[in-house]
Image (cartoon, rainbow, N blue to C red; front, side, top):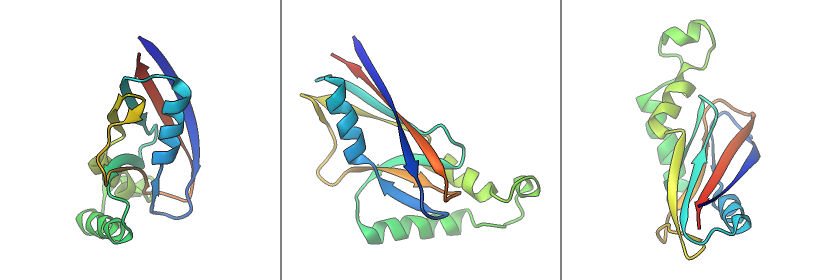
Length: 136
């Protein structure tokens, strides 16, 4: 089994930034030379995450709205006594720090409307995204 890893850098632009990173992940898969296997995308931060869904502007606004209602900023969280970002930590827990996608014949096995999104909840910041490809 062959493995290949690359760390990507992302500059987020706002406190909440839902960024399509599908092209970046595809590029790493292409560089790896792996034709069949898995790619894992991991976010090594506690106030950001990664998810798969459709790249449609209304849907991104809906996600931000739902998370803001579910986990509002400044709702008396204990962590806010230390850092004023408990909402960002809690939102990232809901989204997840990693995803794994099959690679078949050198291509991501995503559905027609599926894209890979980096989700920032405590920006703007410089973030890292670890892309690890394994297979043959």
